[in-house]
Length: 170
Image (tube, rainbow, N blue to C red):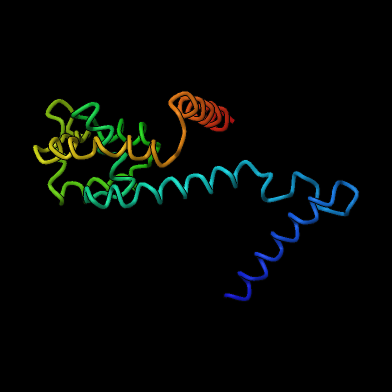
């Protein structure tokens, strides 16, 4: 495995060196260079940001996906599972285990809606409400870690929302 990792690193390094030599150097076209791929930049940024969240969320006893669920609930207090899945772009099979863990940890409650037995409503427990106070430290800490001002953060967020809308429209 280490040998294949070394070979991959050498290939990436070699591609970067060939690209630096100029267009007539036999380098791969820019469209095939790893560092020119938007998908790779998004992937790397997502991994880096999620890794920065980890210690902050560990202190709250949450994983990153659980934190996203809690953000929706802190905003809306009670949400149907179907609406929660739509808000987070998660399918039922992914969302259900998250909710079970949050429920086992005493942060949320799942109940059938009295007016529609097919629908399950997710609500915060008192412990889930209290956790919001501690979680309030997460966004400013992440803002500091990213090193972006408010304008840059809003600009990136808006571009990513537009990109997501364009790609999902597809």
